[in-house]
Image (cartoon, rainbow, N blue to C red; front, side, top):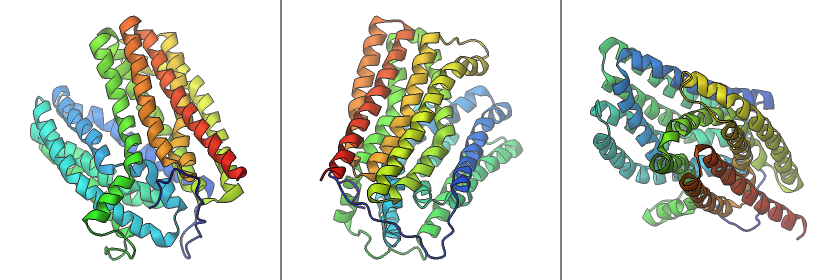
Amino acid sequence: MNQNNDSPGKNVTTPEVPGEKVLSKKHTIGSFAATTVLSGGVSVLSIPVIVLLTNANDWASIALGQAVGSSIGVLAMFGWGITGPAAIAMMPHANRAAAYWESIVARIVLFVPALILTVALTWLLVPSEQLASVVCGAAMVFGGLSGSWYAVGRKRPDRLFILDTIPRVGGTLLGILLLWASGSLVLFGLAQLLGSLLAFLFVTIWALPGLHRPAGAAQGTGSILAVIAAQRHGVAVAVAIASYYPAVLAIIAAFAPAFLPLYALIEKVLRFATMALQPVFQYFQAHVPGHTGPELRREILRGLKITAGFGAICWIGFALLLPVASFVLAAGQVEVPVLVAINLGGYMGLTVVATYLSTVALIAVHRIKSVGRAALVTSVVGLSVILFLALIGDGADISWGFLVTAATLAGYQLVVLYKTIRLRNNP
């Protein structure tokens, strides 16, 4: 997976695979959306069900374990969720199985310490239901082994839905049923763990017929370490994304605690909004990088125009709906100031553009190093501004830091893309 070259490279045309199902654009986006709706819907609806079957304190412990596992699971995924789809889409079909094999071996090496760390932290942090919380956290870490990115890169949302989404959702539903029947949160966690494991196995069996090492795949300790090292830019992006909002909440908790409920609630709304847009990014990850030459430039710019339009809609829509969503979710106990709504709308809109640039456009033109650099630099700049505003301003002023963060990230990446495309058009 020679995807970390930061100099202008040449894309490889990916031929259609004989006998492989080719989905229409409408079917592709619709299938990606089905995965998002089912996963998000079950995840949201499971919260009140678990609270009713147990109590709020036990649910909070489970949620904390899942949060710890999800955060550390980013290390087990190690950037493949960011760079993998576009890399697979650009890759000749004959090389894809080897790339998937390399990712599995590398991520299993990373999975073991991630699992140990999750178990230890969860056991120390949760106030009750420690064993159940540990199991639920472990289920989230298993998500780091997910092959969902491979299905996205193959432009097979149907396989993503059947092989990955259904087992995971089925595990959660089975867990709720077992919880209802037995009252055991441990059984709930084990069912989720089973769903994650089955999803990993099903995608792997599809990606690696025969489950043997494909020809050309890396082997040996040195080669696997080289594969891990090659993913450093992708994991930089993943870690920056995963750590940004927790760091923001930590700053607010320390220096503007009165506004912690506001921004904690906004984090939930942002998460739901980002999930709703995921099918659009998944479609572009599968579609754009498979082109070459002038077609690639045309598709990149076309996708940029579309996502910029989505971004503008999100800016306006998020600014208008954030106060309503916050009122509903917090039962009217948290009020969103107008300035916060406008700035967070801008943050959401610019993040749409930045996400397209980092997961599609810049990877398609072999600027992965720039993607990692942009994520790290932007996180430092954005968090510094938020810390400064938390120290000198009120809670509404902190929202300017979000706008600066997103504008810096999108602006940096747009400059890199412009320079790259201009260089390719003027050899």
